[in-house]
Image (cartoon, rainbow, N blue to C red; front, top):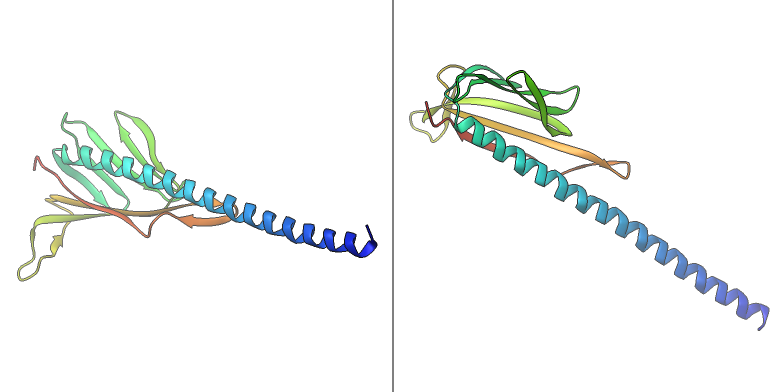
Amino acid sequence: MTLVEVCIALAICGVLMIAITSMTMFSSKSLAGLYNYVDLCSANRLTLDKISREIRQTQRLAEYSTNKLTFVDYDGKKLVYEYVPDERALKRIKDDIQETILSDVDNLTFTSYRRNTQQGTFDQAKTTLASKVINVSWTNSRRVLGARVNTEPVQSAKIVIRKR
């Protein structure tokens, strides 16, 4: 083999190694992003199911703010959902037991509505008293390979208190 052949072989091997490395890095970033998407969407779905089920069964909304809801639960005890921005977490408190039911939350807002719509529209009137409908919406994200990646723009649901 001549020196020219060796140089050409090394150049071809170098180009192949760069291509393989680039493809591996792109694939790992894509798979990490896909895993993050699936994991956060699963956590969002489970949390929304749990919140919906529990709010529907409450007797009434006792206290309201945009980041904290206090209900009188079906058993007469307090049920609290609170968003803690410093911890980026949604917490559930019942019987003095506090648990984090969703983490990596960027922002979360509760809104309280009356059941009846406003006259001449399909919109429901916002209220803090005599609430029948609770809207919860949030966004969450997590760092994946140094970049913050969102799941979807907003997770949101309107939940009707059935017992009221």
